[in-house]
Image (cartoon, rainbow, N blue to C red; front, side, top):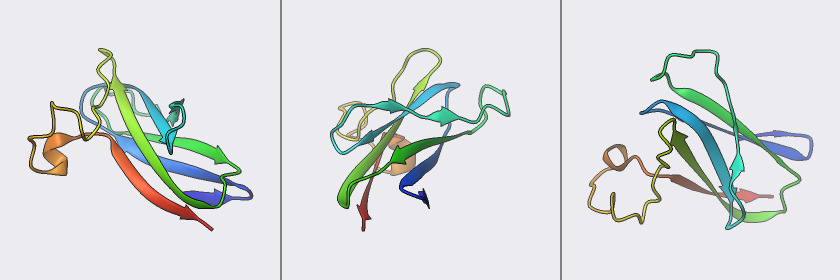
Length: 103
């Protein structure tokens, strides 16, 4: 995450199936669509994405990202029954949540 003036830019990468979109959720707010760099249109290329977070309030926040593939499959949350039996992050490939502090 980078800071510019009074905004932050959240940046990440999505991969696996051909990616249609990436969304970001702050705390328990609504999912908001990120911008995907589509320079490389190969269907299995990593998709670098970013989302601008204007004027975040000070304090601790959770930032969660999820991808949706071109078939409409949404990346599951970490408590989804489909992935709860997986043993590693790389095996589960679930949504990613980070805890950050804005100071």
